[in-house]
Each structure stands twice: as structure tokens, then as C-alpha cells.
Length: 516
Image (tube, rainbow, N blue to C red; front, side):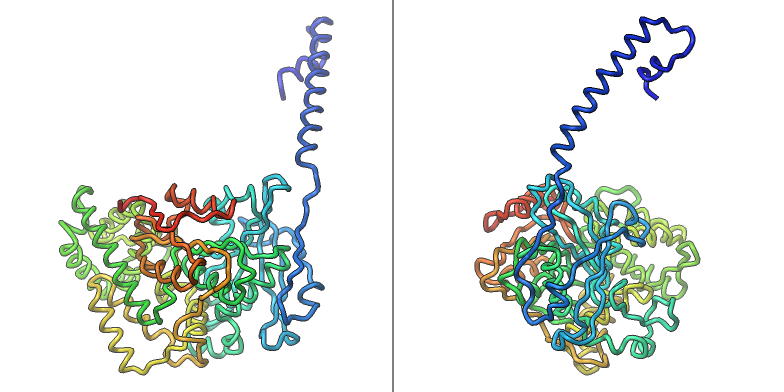
């Protein structure tokens, strides 16, 4: 309660003059408050204009396009989305070749724009990577990264096919089991496998664009999200609005080549960490440089292979987990280096895997070869194998695995198992490498970090080139880590300028950073 209000409360001992003065003050304050309220309402009370588009996706029945409206309501889950967010369900064909057939529900989430209605550009659809990452859960978790864009956009995300609440792939032995069992996967989800690939989700994106009221899709995709965004640009070049593809996958590599490139990149990132650790961190757990670090990590891996270390909460960490969790720290860039050093010290000196496991969980990375205990493993495998038609025999796979293992003393053994990901998968995939050419599309901003351990930088160059002349615009960031927005100020300014004004950076722009 304010002091002024107390003066007007009629307590004993207050003189009449004081009460009169108090009443005048209250009247003045009330008048000013009413004026301010009226002024504010004059600026903000204008009704929100819901955008409409007049270019529905071709070939779909009217019931799914002009006859469908998104009914936004309070989200019931996840808990972080129960306030300030809205959720909806979009109906799409299960099989776009049979648009009048069975439909599925795609789960959507939205945070409405906060800026003036007249300045709102539309919706910005976000995909945070994977495959296997829920956008419904991801938007509340990652809002702080994109919140400044709320002045011009509604921020929208969704659960892609096979993920979360959108025809989820079930590969556990029981209904509540989030693990992966090949036989259970075939039994419980086999009917969905032909319809959960990236090209199907890209078609969902175009229906989403139309129902959100946008003539063109505005989109921000990270890591695997760049594969989805590029697939959309290829299918619908005339519907491309402002697309950001950050930390892009390499559209020129098949699944085996991708594993080899990635393991080389994560090893190089670890070597840079080890060199920094030796020079700057007292009692560095990896020794006096990259060579000693490789020897120490090999001994640690052998120890964990024989006896996994306790990680708290009934969990343990084995040799493969060691490789995956270290890579997650490296994905955080130089911010991940000090906590990685501390976590490795705890593991090496005290057999305590808790800090390493907790730090990897906090990183939120799902854009890597999945560990056997990764809850997103089922969706990752199913979507990856729906996309890739590569089905070599064991002789080729064994040869590829040996190349990967030899390429990295720290991560090679764990990464080498990724080549077998789609062996004996019950359905053919779409193609060896994706089609991303988007002739005639508006400029697409491709952002790559030179020290990215997960999607190596050459892939950014290849993506920009493959989109086509005048379409792919490459922005280079001399940064460690998987993704540079909004950590690098130069990248953030360039991306925000593009999304707000539609202006791409000059060709050849390089943002300096931790690797400069």
C-alpha cells in the first residue's frame, strides 16, 4: 500500500488540512493515471489483426486449407508453456500422395508478438535441430535466445512427424519406455515409417505457413533444422520468405561421409580445448596438449568400458557416453571449456561422472550420433533412415567404420557405430543426398561457424552453393561451438537485420569471434 493512500485512510490524529491535501493528491494522481491508461490503451488496445494468406498449398482438399482454422488455446504441457504460450493442432494428410485419406495431428506452440500490431511481419517458425527434438518443449526452453524477435514476429514451433505429440515413433518395449529396441520399433511404429521423413515435414510446413496467415514462410532452422528449411526451399521456392539456416548440415554428403566429417571436426575441437587447457587451466585434466590428452582419454575410456562410473540418480556413464558427453560440452564453444575441465577432473580423480553427465544434459544437444540411452534415439533413427536411401552391405559398412575410428583417437570408436544406423531398416529411404536447389527463391541466409564440432563449416559453404546462385548467402563466423546465434554479436546483428528488414549481409561477410 502506498504512503499517499495511507494518508487518505482517515486514521485518528490526522488534521483536516492534511486530509484535504491528501484528497487533492489522490485526485491528481488518479487523473494522471487515467490519462496514462487512456494513452496506453490508445496505443495498445487496437485489436490484433490476424493475417490471412490467399495461396494455399496446391493439391490439398479444402477441408485442410480454406476450411481449417487453428484454434489456439492455453497449453497444458509442458509445464513451462502453461503461461504466456498458446497451443494448437494442425491436421495434415498422413500421405500427401493421398491427400483425401487419413489425417494426422501436428502439435503447434506459439508465443505472440509483443510489438505494435502495425509492425508485425508475421510468424517466425523455429526448428531447433535433431532430428528428434520437440519444438513444443523447445520453444519455452530456448525463448531467451529468440525473445528480441518478438517485437516483429509471433514465434511458432512444432513437433515434427515422429516426435513428441505428432505421430510419435514408439520403439520401447513398453508404452512408457523411451528407449530403442529394433523389434519393438518394427512392431509398434512400422506403419508410420514411410511418412515421417523430412520431405513430408517440409510439406507440413507449407500448410502451416498458410494457416498462420503468411504468404511466405519465415523460418529459423538450426542444425538438422537447416535440412528441413532447405527441403522446404526446394519444394516451394516461390513461398520462401526470410529463411535462416544456422549451423547447416552438408547436403553433398551421404550418411557415411557425414559421420566421417563430423568425427574429424569434433576431434579438432577437442584438440583446441586440450591446447587451451594445457596453457590456461591449472591442473589441466588432459595434460600438456592434444597428444597427451588423447592418451589420457584412451585410458579413461578403457576404465569406463570395464566399469561405468556413477553419475547420480541411479545413472552411470560408460565409454561411449564419455565421447558423447564431451562432444556436448564442445558444442557450447569456449563457454563449455572450463566446466568440461572441471567435469573431467571429477571423473578422472574421483570417479564421479555427475558433473559430466549433468553438463551434457544442460547443453540440450540432440544433433549428434545418439547414445544408446538417448530418449530421442527412436525418432532420430526413424527420420534419418526415412531420408537416406544408403543401404550398403556389411563389407562397406565395416570399411567405413574403420575409417571413422582411425580418424579420431577420442571419438572414433563411439562414432563408428553410426554407419550401421540404417542397416536392415524395413523401408527404403528417399535419396542418398538431399535435394536443396531452390532456383527463384528469395535470398536464404546460411550461417556457419568455422569451429563447429557437430556440423563442420565446409557444409555451410556447400549448402549456400547448393541452394543456387543468388539464393544462398553465406555468413561466416570465426567461432567455436555448434551455433553462433545469439552468442556472437556480429552474427546476431546480421541475422536480426535480415529477419526484420529482409536485407542480407554483403557477400563474403566474416564475423570475428573466439577463433579470430
